[in-house]
Length: 398
Image 1 (cartoon, helix red, strand yellow):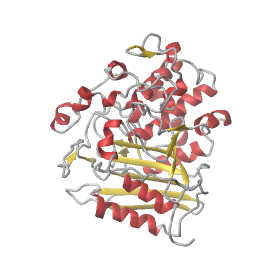
Image 2 (image 1 turned 90 degrees about the vertical axis):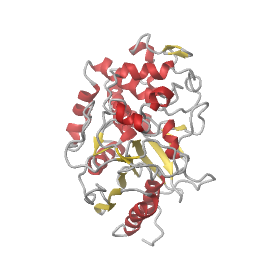
Image 3 (image 1 turned 180 degrees about the horizontal axis):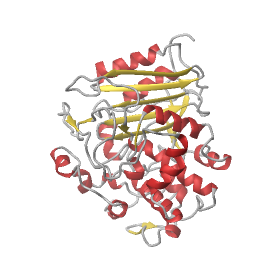
Image 4 (image 1 turned 135 degrees about the horizontal axis):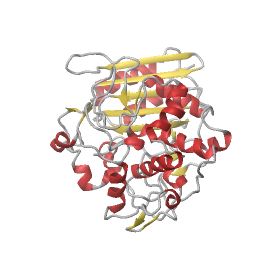
């Protein structure tokens, strides 16, 4: 199995990468034309031309809130996509996890330069790893070099095709998944601090450190520090709970088939304990707007930790033995910045999991945001980048 933006997810990413080449210097993000007509066209095109069953987008800017949709939430009944639907957000979860860590740093309960060995003694050792040389900061910006458990061939095979039906209710502990990553024969992607290698194992270790530092579960800290204070009524960490609570779209997946015309499966119901602090949260477009508005706007972290999260992102192209990630990006602590086609730089996070692509990006000050989700994984990331371009790089005059 895998979760958003793992290297195995490259089976989907490979066909939707942003075109290479030089990009202009980042421009200031500004609201699109009144009515967001270009965004609506991008949503319609995603369904008409890419195989997306349904797609939603929510925009918030100085004029207020706008919601748009295209396609369906359920291909059997034809039910339309609606606001307030819950969906699996995949690796957008990492922004939540990093925020909790940085709040603990602000409270002096831990330090970003603490080693993994200090908090989880003896866990990250052997097979080329030394937890004394890997810091919490390296976990959060994926510069640790630790192998992504989701790319382990034996583990990944359990989530492909027919095997998914056999294993979709399997439960995993964090310790089990960390050990899978550390034991992989490939070993580290690179020496600690010497590259960028996107790895869900990093965020499992980070959440295990949260639990060690607080004496509470990751889910309890998430609820107490973020979900409850922000009033995120559609957001929760399901753990091993297989069904999505409340109104939600069906999640349609290729189950990572490499067939050019793959069969589409309903992957809505599954145990995502394999995703947890790296990609397990369920949320809504509105809740993601509220979270990223608070995060980008400096209302969740003090200035020092805000600086740590955003101001020294690492180059995602320097990846050693790791698989390629999203071009035109730099990765901070749980968040990344991306240059769009017109050179505008946006900040936020995104995620892929079975039957769901999610993107939540906006201006650095959080005053102009777009959150979007596709309830299918066949269309790839490209359709969501097209939606971002339509909002932040509109061709119509303002």
